[in-house]
Amino acid sequence: MLPSTEKVVDSDNRNRDRISISNSNSSRSSDFLNKGCNVFDGKWVIDETYPLYNASQCPFMERGFDCLGNGRKDQGYLKWRWKPQNCEIPRFDVGAVLEFLRGKRVVFVGDSLSRTQWESMVCMLMNGVEDKSSVYEINGNEITKQARHLGVMFGPFNFTVEFYRSVFLVQPGLVPRHSPKRVKAALKLDQLDDISGEWIDSDVLVFNSGHWWTPTKLFDMGWYFQIGGKMKLGMSINNAFRVALATWQSWVENSVNPNRTRVFFRTFESTHWMYVI
Image 1 (cartoon, rainbow, N blue to C red):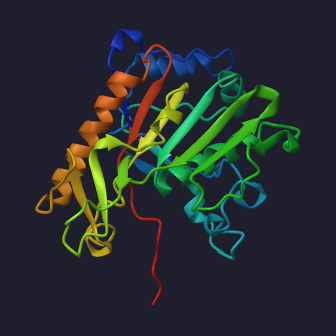
Image 2 (image 1 turned 90 degrees about the vertical axis):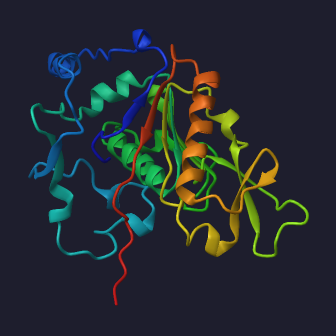
């Protein structure tokens, strides 16, 4: 999974959990948290002990993202690790994480960035499970980019890691009557996605959005913005994204219990698509 460069949303800092894990790395983990390591200030470094899992051996890896399985010869891209400037991120300890997540629910919400992070987390955690058959997709669904919901149960530890596809976070809707012909769909910026009620009952909630907020994904496809039941045909994508994020923030503050749920919002990353001419 990509290094932790996300921003934490927490309406009451006094209620923030301090992760305490009883293992050989517990002191390093506590030092990392208590010293306030700035994970945003750093660089990518080569680490020959990576990767943390073999994608070709993970049944939950989408085929299109299994580079080695698809014939890629070089492996240097698997060795990159994020290194903060003035501290060290504790090394991933699969046994400790499995125990920490026992009985919990982890939910990723967003576009393909969230889905690939979900896949990576599931594959890393599988390394610590002896009986691989005890880890399964709860609905028997195939891992595809079209799936609206995917959930993997880790039977021996009684927890799930789930993904919900919601590329805009806010709710898509039908075109209002008397709209111009160029309008094929409306994006309701003041309403969160109608499946948002399924996200609330979770212990860790990881969001992302951004890659679909472009002219080619919106205007070129006939998608325009709507607020309060009225189309906003002149609204820019940047302003619409701000309104959508404000709607998301309001939902988090009013619907999510900060005493139970840790909420993260992932920012942009480089595209994972490459066009070969």
